[in-house]
Length: 175
Image (cartoon, rainbow, N blue to C red; front, side, top):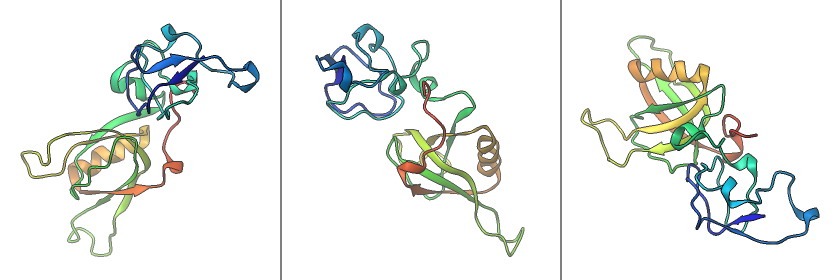
């Protein structure tokens, strides 16, 4: 079966040098262990895999999907937002997204959670865009949260808050 040669981050596309074949007792292997490097090469990693771990089918996107599309399971969406707080969390982090509106609209209003425990899929490399807003952060969210984020992005101020990884949104493709 195959094991990771080094840590494989979320979204990585596997090459021939990322995995190696090892022999282990069948009783010690997960049922969906990948045994042939042809089944791994070119596939997108949907959850981080640590060096030395047995590669499993549930950790890989379907063979016909690549790039960001390989990370978006059915029923989920990848949405790019530009948080006003400037937070640029690392890929793989989990965040909550808060939106607030102008207090003159509703003096008693407070920030609303528009996406809870969203997985960070990508982060733009530039520090600020032309409008002076934060970097773009692409998040994995539910369909409903995608609508809320679109509205909040257009009409409010977005703030990201780091959340525990165990709270991550959405199931990985293949699971």
